[in-house]
Image (cartoon, rainbow, N blue to C red; front, side, top):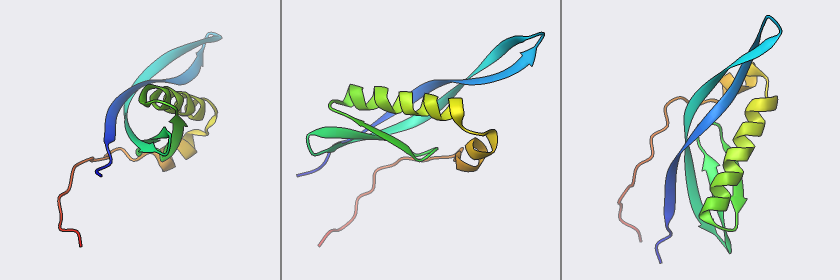
Length: 100
């Protein structure tokens, strides 16, 4: 039986803050990919741009949990770690090949 794969585009509002007159400003919007796959009784969601994953009982739960994981990552990660993990170009495609 073929396994279904769900690919979604996540819009993440990254908090990139800097100090101007003691006021925190600037939010950047970043579009990321979510690949969601059924695993057992639930779903696993992966963001290939950062290699961050999460899971949930439904597709929507997995998507929301991945978004939360990404937001937390951007909140606490060092800018150098973000740059080193970020894959700016990710291509998702279907392949057809002979099996067996």
